[in-house]
Amino acid sequence: MRICDVRITPVSVPVEAPLRYSTGADGGIHRLIVELETDNGCVGLGECNAGAAREARLRECIPQILGADPFHTERLRWQIGAPAEIKLFGNVNHTFAAIEFACLDIQGKVTGRPVHDLLGGKLRDFIPLIGYLFYRYAGAHGQGAITDTASMLAYARDVVEQYRFRTLKFKAGVLPPEEELQAVAALREAFPKISLRVDPNAAWSVGTALRMARKLGSYDLEYLEDPTWGLRGMARVNAKCPEMPLASNMAVATPEDFAPMALLNALDVVLIDPHFYGGLRQARHAAAALELLNVDVAVHSQGELGISMAAQLHLAAVLPSLTHAPDAHYHHLVDDVIEGGKMRIEDGGIRVPEGNGLGITIDPERLNRYHELGRKWQASAETSMVGDSRAEAHLAVLPKW
Picture 1 (tube, rainbow, N blue to C red):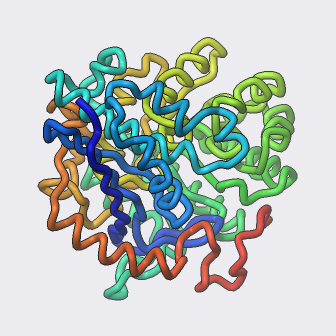
Picture 2 (cartoon, rainbow, N blue to C red; picture 1 turned 180 degrees about the vertical axis):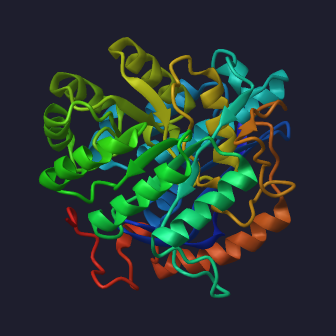
């Protein structure tokens, strides 16, 4: 069996209302959908973050993928995502992750096994997810804006009632810290038994992070994620405010960061991401290394559609050291590119897919519809990493406070 065709489709799927981050705002989830087809007609699905550079990098890899055995993912990794290539040229981890997801999907379909069996076997059937709380601009019909503590609290009540989330994550770094502190206080008062996280996406200086960490200590946070930029900055906050658990997916973005993280005693929780780490198997290895270092494991979300969401669920199912509900933007989406639309969130989470491979199927009509939107939106460069044209300070300069 050999891979005989590679199809790459940029898509954008809208969210209910544009989500605001410390670095900008997004009106949708922008992804690249990868389909690998074998010479016996089996199709494997992959997905990664969108962007012209990543799309070009994927297309550059097509000659290496064509003719490859989809079971030989380690050979493909060293051809496409070798450590030196990653270190020197970037973008490779996301590229290879999408290819590896598709190869594992093929492997599962050929062998009649779900992907979690190929990763060592699941330890849990159900994955609890977070309710992700963002400040938001109004949507297309002038609805859905979240601009202050009152609207944030109202939205939190809605998603907890609708989805039964047991963990809420508050995306900070958008408004001045004291205003966001008021929102955290209101959330804690309204939900005394729910786990609560705060993530400013490195918007605060070390001094502001220390001041805010001490104030946030009154609200029994599960953890404070990336309050400031870089490993040394995180280490300084951790040293001077040891009572607050610190987490990161920005200061610690790849397994190469684990050694300095441990030496600096920089943080307590690492949010792993198979896209950033170069695939599900590499993320599984990373979680095992963190287990040896006695660092808690969580799962990061960069905004997934159904293919990556399924991959994240399979990964979460096999991690023995997963001690925190995985992040997910999923409940903000209005639709998906998979058959049946969005996966169903019940009782605060999603059951691990049980079909062969990733356990999901692409919907061609949805794929085409959101491809047309993706070409339009991605060309406009209105994504969270290039600033926010509606904000007074358009440039994504950090720290903001």
